[in-house]
Structure formats: C-alpha cells, structure tokens
Length: 425
Image 1: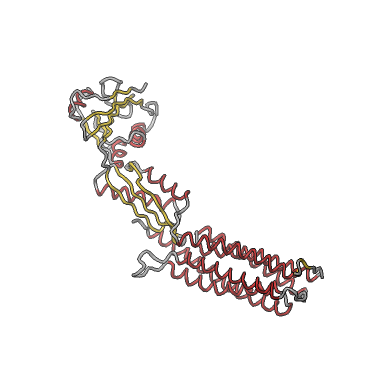
Image 2: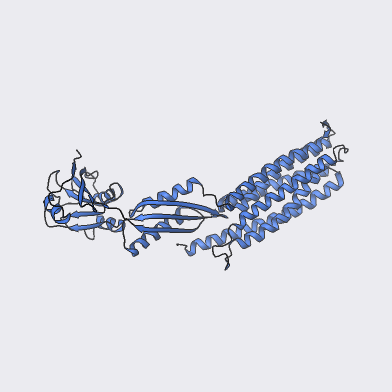
C-alpha cells in the first residue's frame, strides 16, 4: 500500500475545509430559521412557516454533519480502515430530514386549506429576498468546494441549498403576489398553499437524490466507469504487467478504494514489489482521492514463451545492431510439449528513427509482442533497451554467433524443430 505524507496532508487540509463550510452552514441555517420564524409569526404565511421549519431542520442536520466529518477520518481498533462512510450515512440522514420537512409542509397544506391570505408588509418582501440571495450564494460555494474535494457531505449540502433556493423563490413570489393583492385560488387552495405545495416537490426531488446516492455507496456500489478505466490504463502502461485478472473499486465517503489482481512477467519478489509500488504511485498521482490501493500480483504461469532475435534478413543472419536491425524474428514456444509453435518475422517499425530507436524497439517488443526473452549477439547491458527489458522483467542473452539455426539448436533445445514459419513482408 502506498500513501505519501503529502497525500495525507492534502486530505487533512480538505477535511478542515469541509468542517469550516459545515460550521458556516449551521450558523446560516440558525440565522435563516430565526428570520423566517419571525416573519411567519408576523405574516401568518404557511409558505414562510414551511421555510422556517426547513431552515431549523437544516440547522440540526448541520450539527450531525459536522460531527460526522470530524469522525470520518478517525481510525479505531474496531474500524481499522477508517470511518469514511460516515459521510454517506450523514447524507442519508440529511435526506431523511428533508423528507420530514416535506411531510410537515404537506400536513399544513391540507389542514389550513381555507385559511385567509397572509398579511404581507414591504419589510417581509425585502427580508425574504435577502434570505434567498444568501441561500443561493452559500449553495454555490458549498457545491464548488464539494466537487473540488469530492466530498459527498458538501455535495449533499450544495444540492440541498439549490433546492432551498428554488423553494425560497417560490415562497418569495407567493409573498410578493399577496403583497400586491393578486390572490386567487385553484382547487380551493390559495397562492400561499400552492407555493407550499411546489416547495414540497423540490424537497422530494432533493431528498430522493441524496438518499439514492448515499445508499449506493453504503451498499458498496462500484466507482464510476471512467475512474476504473483510468486505473486500467495506468496498470497496462506498466511494461511488466502481462494481464489484469480483476479490477474493482468502491467509494467510501469522498475516498476511493481500488483492488487489482495482475499477472507479472517476473517471479522476482523484489521486482514485483517495485512494479506494484510504481503502479500505486501513478494511480495516486492521476486519480484524485484514492484512500487505499491493494494490488495482488503473481508471476506468469503460462506454458508459452516468446523469444525475440534481431535479424539482418529473413533467413538466418542475426543482426549485430539491436536498434538498427531491419527485422526481428519472434518465436512462440510451448514449454510443456517442447515445441516451437510459431516463427514470425516482423519489420522494425523504428528503423528510420533518428534518435532513441533502441529504446522504442524494446518497448515495441514488450508492449506489442509481449516477449519474455531477447537473444542478441552484441551486449546491450547499460544501454537503453536493457533498462526497458529489466523494468518489464524480460531476460536478455548474448550469443557469439550470427547464425539463427545455431541459436535455435543451443537455446531452444529442440534440434530440427522449426514449427510454423510466418514471414512478414
């Protein structure tokens, strides 16, 4: 597992930002609840009363959110992997609070269907307009920081504020119409009651979105497909990786947990560990908010081996220059039955390159042809291709001959066996 001090410091900084925003949310909710409660008493408006209940409920929810964020990064004996999911639990709790508000509004709508229109003054109109503006600005701030830190708690808070903005606008328009005396009824319900009903719809939509997103994580739903594809690309870019056997991921709070099982071209434990560490470091660098990565690696157990030899022609002459060899012959061996299954000549695609052709050829042999071994008649030690092969777990051997037939007889231990000869022109 790889987790740098820099990564931990970044997580701690984000957590402090989230706690600060949640504290601001609590103070704003308390202020809005007090303001709307006073306006509701003065005006007698059901819509304003619903808004006051909404803000007061949000204030209590903010306290729970603050405590949850505080606990989410702690580790305890019985929770060694941390309490990251507590943020998602709190998202579900916030959704339930919103549903409770919706129930209260619906109950008041039907209980007071025949009530007279509220008494609206200019001060009530102005104060509600300011309350709507404050809610909008704070909601945008919470969403911006939530998306930046990928905190489900802040994203939930931001979406909730958005719902509050729409509902506050409905309440404001209702109050404004009543102020100008433009009161009318539909199905026996006045503007004030209709506005409360519209607010109820916004509340239900916001609650369902938060509830479904929170439950997905609590039930260990997979991380999004785009993130998994990025991780898959990072793993396959590592030359020593032959095959990805499995790759899964899950969310826990705002963090991601990745598990992968891979097959490597090496059986050396130290080299395998180095490969795993490089993959983990690259994932942490390119994928945000990865809490832990677990990589299970094992050596290739295939009964086949691929061996590449640089060639001067497509007959028997081995080239003395690795990067400038016009052809490469690639043998596929069945190590269980001791047979050459295929002998394929491939053109060197980097023959006309001016710089770094040896390294590019080595990477081509590893990534496109998945060779396990390369046989040359000039030493490439301490040269670019040798480092590519070493990182990929590809062995290289030096022979003192320019005759391919002698190489086959000496190293493949299968005299006279030539298998299928495939020539690439």
